[in-house]
Image (cartoon, rainbow, N blue to C red):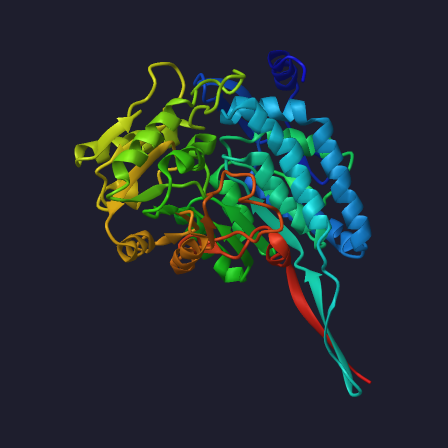
Length: 485
């Protein structure tokens, strides 16, 4: 990879543009994008006026009508071209992600290369051919997966390219058009990626508009949008659902999580501690399905706490452009303030800090991996989603008690059980009220996530599924063809 500083300077020297009907979108103004490692503005992002949404939808509907007539083979070939294009520009896109989001450069590059290709190849290999329901002497009945039309994709700031591609791939493969709105905290890499993809995608099929809440509301409320795919917080998800209700839009809401891990008494602290730390602090804890609460048997607490501190202390916090960095800064000042508030509140309520516990004394939004014990569910750090590098430890005496406390949250995205007794782990996992239950892993391990695994939450953690055939079919509607013989 070329020198990152030179790559970034070259990337920032070019103007950023939204993509509207295959060309640069007019800008009504601009807004600043900051590097969270320094707190300094690095670029001005063009802002799309909400009144352009109508034109974007019109162009998308025209493109979608043509695209819906193509074969799955044609769609598959296009998605593979998208993967090749992103791979060709992965170095440039990676430095933009690190500059605007803060994560280590290696993780940023993975978003644009291996992770993106995995989604694009994975969805394009799935089967959406008609299902035969009845085929007898009297009739033949088939269920066909038809496209929905125009999809609005609202992207979070923690994985800007990865989340965009996880929505783009199934939407296009199912025959839809897509309008992407990146987070105003991290719009640059997404805008640049779509600039490059103008040479690959048919005009109007994928559009990218940058802006704040007013633009998002215009997309969600527009009658010409058939589906909204939103990834973000639960409060915003509720607002999206309410705004979509008058036009009865299809929805996929991948919302916040407060994932609980339950360690069983026979677990080996030395073996599981590095995995737990990685599960909690990957991407500086800014992962919807990161480990966010850890229930530990009283008899195992001290030994596990010691191993967790040892594992956490090995992680280097620093600028994402430093090759030695494991954890970058929090992606924005608002999230940094939330983590600071929650940790301080827990400390004031009696929690004991085992490591970390205060921001680093340097510019930027750096917060070290933080472990706290003597925690209770009455603390906001436990009851709320911290979305940062702070993990509370809670002790329990009986497994039934731990399961009940884990399930008491309004959220139910993921959970995990840690034990060498797989059968016991499966019994406990089956009782967790969450969309995904892991055993001896949680989120960050390579085997924990794959494009073929459906992902989503229960309760206030969302509606619908991303990934897997279930996620692909979220971008379709079923039409039954019933033919009398």
